Structures are given as C-alpha cells and as structure tokens.
Amino acid sequence: MSSFPSGQTQVESKRILCGVLAIVLGGLGVHRFILGDVVGGILRIVITVATCGFGGIMSLIEGIIYLTKSDADFIQIYQIGGRKWF
Image 1 (tube, one colour):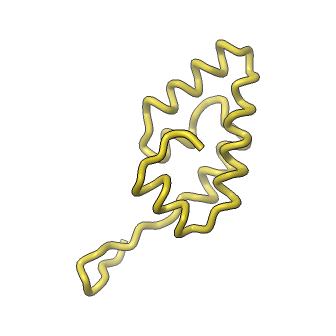
Image 2: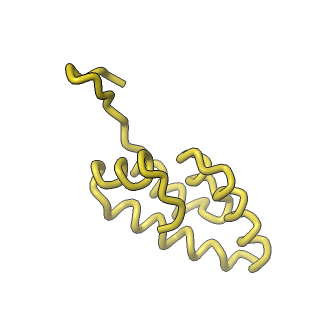
C-alpha cells in the first residue's frame, strides 16, 4: 500500500483472485475468507454440504459477477463497503 498526499491509502484489488476462487472453489467459501468475511465463508460451506454441492452454483454466479466489475467498483463494493451477498 502506498500513501497518497491527501492521507488516503491505495487498496489493492482482490477482484481476480476472489473471482477465480469463487468459480473454482466456491463451495468452500475461500473467496469470502479472503475478503475477510469469515461468517460468509462458513455459511458457504454449510450451504454446500446441506445441498449436496448444489450451493456451489451460488458461488459460481458470484465469481462471474466479481470478474465483470471494474477494480474500482469491486474495491468500493466488496473490500471497503463489505457487501456480503452478490
């Protein structure tokens, strides 16, 4: 992280990492853990187990949404704003 003259800090986007992990390992909630949402990650695991794997479809959709957002939008919505679902 680098510091801007106005005192703001630059936040590095985790969009690609979270998007790919949501698509590949979505049922395990890894992408939610990376975003700092431990409860959301645990819920993804519980939903996947309870639905015999079909809960992973939700994470697949979420991964596609992550990858279609710009870095600035992703940072504002998910990293700074902390949005939990879609």
